[in-house]
Length: 499
Image (cartoon, rainbow, N blue to C red):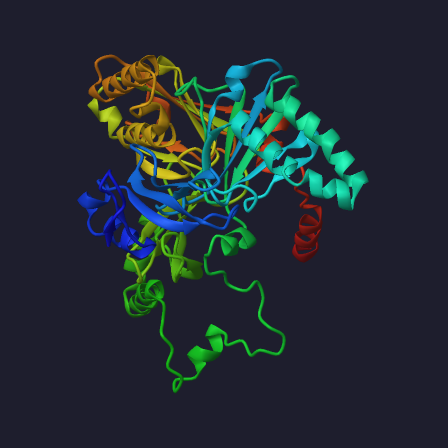
């Protein structure tokens, strides 16, 4: 190693910088700045890349990289995420009105896997076109203009007609970056690590909408996850469980979740029929735990997801799912609604007045939105995903999620009035848990798959809990995918079978 100059920094290789960053939990957050000699792609001379592995408070672990060439003056910066991928992908949709430059100045965090679209121009920036960056809406558009403009001289020599069309398109794109026309800015990231600033947070922003979604098989493979083939190869023998069980000489490694089910069936067969019937009537325990091949959300290794269906009193049939990874120890559990889709949505209103109300069990589904009118707090459907928790646990999860998503508004470079706004909101949020005054929790679920436990034996006797059923609007059905759902062929098949 050698000194890099007057500042006394050290020129090291990339491996040494990475190893020093992961040497320990406390040392990782105080990683020094490293300088690495690297090749300039413009003049092909050696420049310097400054590498800083750090963690942005309340957001993500990131790698900040800045390149500078002393020979030609080329400069470049990049942001890469060093933490794990999020459970779901995210899609931000920002409506940019004409002439509102404050919307163009909103901060944007774009990861390596994010795609940017502007439907009005039929324009798309694929993930490989712009690497991970911390910029603004205007900055991303102008960067795209500069990159398209860079090769125009060569295009005019080879294909003048195409170069002329690109000049016309660049004029339109540049006008969007200057705020001369209204447009829609869409940021779609399957990794879930991208972000667009919401200056009205924690309140809802009428110009910004966020949607969380499950990654497809292709997106999982593009992010580096192991993906099971959709179907068996033609001609490949398939071993079914029934044939294996019938052959006592074939040894099979049973999944962990099925061991208890086999033992339970054996105990039922050997037990007293009256006692077994009474036990089954008292609680609808699962007769069998099924297993599915899955992929670990942390390390991408193959693992097993176990699930079974049961019925919650005063609620409905649900599916309990649990995933564990033997490679890295990752664990995850979630609860999915079972049975048919209800004809109406459900709105649950709870008036929280005492400590017992904070301990009420809460089931929040993926399709449910949460509101706290006293704080003017509103979370769109899909935020936080599905949860099985308590009222207190739900508020804590909301606080943690807001700090993580809007972490850039809590950093050292944040304006004082923005920082004070967030501190005041956190104080008001903590007062909810201390019950200094009564407050209201509203869970609005279009699929009626959410639940708040009553404090009395029957829901009707609980004066603090109100449940309202409502007819879903066309927009809600469209968002849930119900408008295009056609079950006529299945209904006809069932009717034919029953007759």
